[in-house]
Length: 85
Image (cartoon, rainbow, N blue to C red; front, side, top):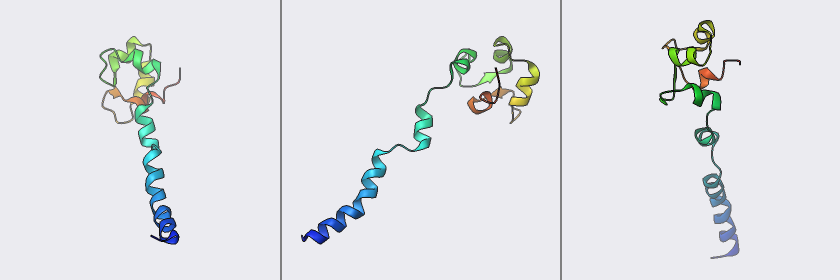
């Protein structure tokens, strides 16, 4: 194989090799642990904060209602991060 062909193959393969080594932001978010306040409030460890768990953590009902954007009665991690302590 000529040097030119070798260089062209390497240039074409570099994005594939580089992309495989760099984790995406989605992958980084999956590995980042939730804040300790969320972990402590999530008494049953289901990954959501119920209204009862929030009350035990000292979150006022009005704050819970405002943070519960999908109005399902539970706060997921993104809803929890909206709360200000």
